[in-house]
Image 1 (cartoon, rainbow, N blue to C red):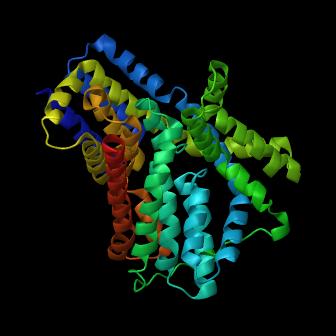
Image 2 (image 1 turned 120 degrees about the vertical axis):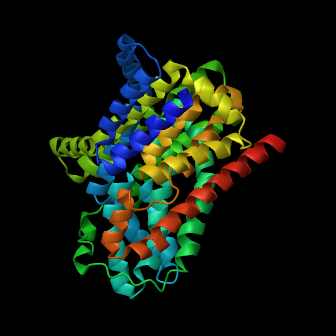
Length: 440
């Protein structure tokens, strides 16, 4: 009976968000309270469960997401993203133009949220399309695949960062594994698959061609790369050093401090404030306004993550998690595949990768002590599942369709299939890493 109530809660969530068009945060609150009451949580305990779920989920995550948004915003507003893109294009030339855009998308996608990166990079794609007279989908898909993969797989993006916190995974190790999974997924889905789509006719509007800043107003390539990639570099470096170096207790404490995502992002924001802002003549109040705008951009994302945490806590407090554990353990499905499958089902139903990943994590989390699986790989498995088959209930689907001026059929043929290839390739990569860790 309890399992049916959980299914009812998830179905109600789907209906409220996709059919009723109710705000995702409000939907999570309504479903959390209603499901909690139906599952037998006392009236005077419901609010406490919701508060605990929100607090436990956000915690330090709020700092990571806010600082990540600030870093992405200053990288975009200062022209650092444009500098990286222009340099990559000039370096690779027309023959390897797909590689240039794919690598640019990957570099820029690390600090930027997907929607920001999409809006920023699409005009660049269209500029290349008109300059070299090449098919728009063929040119654009590699870059957009990179943006999508970094959004779904790599911290400090909201969903992966939230999953790292929920599963008590290691941010640096998750990032290392995520890189190993992300690169082949991007090459397969973005580079190779796009070559089968040259026949699709897309007529992007000329008015969307990038209005670029003059070259003398852009920061240097070295400063642009340093500010964009510092969080990734420090996380990977401190993780490798902690595992390979034989440090004394004091050294390990210092290393642990600099391995914390919040500390690393604060350092990155401070460096970007100086190199991309103050040093180039920007006033501190102007930079702070940029950061305030960044926080407004991700306010709703934080609330959605908080709402998912509330639903997760209701499942835990009601004891239904144990029933779910018993049922799921009887499924002849490996744990990592199970995490991917649950996230994939929710993604197809709801459309939002962030909501899919966090909801799946709430279901899987109580089972982790029994599943005996690496939490870093579970983060990536759920992240991969959350990207499966974006379609008409996903805002990203409509952004791609409208910007590229495509039919729904061609959008599914290009965008939706690309996302599915990314998702399946990601799962395969996770399973391969798990196999190598267990048997070699």
